[in-house]
Image: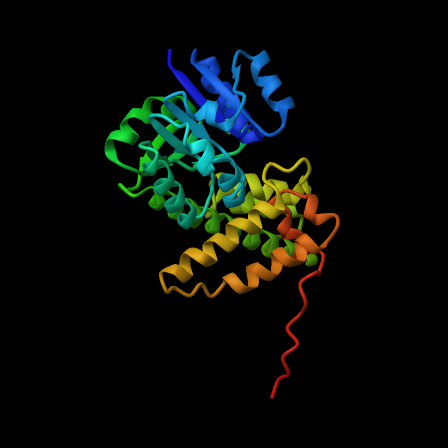
Amino acid sequence: MAVLGFLGLGRMGSAMARRLVEAGHEVHVWNRSPADVERLVEAGAVAAGSPGEALATGLSFSMLADDDAAEGVLSDESVGDARGIHVCMASISPAEADRLEARFASAGVGYVAAPVLGRPSVAAEGRLNILAAGEEAFVAEATPFLETLGVRVWRFGDRPRQANVVKVAVNFNIIHAIQALGESIAMTERHGIDAGDFHELLVSTLFDGVVYRGYGREIVDEAYVPPGFLMALGFKDLRLAEAVAAEAGLTLPTAAALHRVYELALADEELRRFDWGGAAEVTRRDLYPPDRKETP
């Protein structure tokens, strides 16, 4: 048994922290919302009175929504109480990973980036894929606990930011897949073809895989509520991809059109509450403005 800290108990963080508790560890949990802490305490966790208390356990983990949440929770003040190693599992920008790595290093604490692939239901079953980067010794110490949370720990270098770059690139692929599914399903539907039959063709032949199966079925059934991953978070990940590409001097030709799709989705009172797979509805519902270019 180990004494661990865990900060951030949204749907994903709660599933991960519970998994560590069920593995027999003493997990000190902190969250802005006390109700989420109480549920984990009922499952056997220990309530931490502050972020600093959770970080002081010696090996701590966090699953926070975005850069702003990471800055607010993993502040200079709370990191000043940290000990040992911290593993940040959030989908944050590489630039934020650099800031956090430097902040923890100033406190004499190791820092590992370990963003994940998978939804809360996958986390609850310990089937996440985990993208880890950081100093070898730090990653090695965290790995037994990461293996409790996932089916594989993928190593992506000695700089924590590298894991965040990979996560951004993976999510950029998912955004494209959702858009491709939305456009092709809308196209076939308009010609009287059953969306379910078309989706079955895709996943039974050329496009088998978790993303096409899961999001394709979600789009066919229009099953966007409750959201597994909010539309606003999808837009956050798209903007991260744009920033990561710009940092490297790279142009992403499709990004501008995708950016507009998310702007339109978030401007719609219904779509903004959907799972990010609901971005497909921008095409399906004719919300994307047609090309107005005049032919010469």
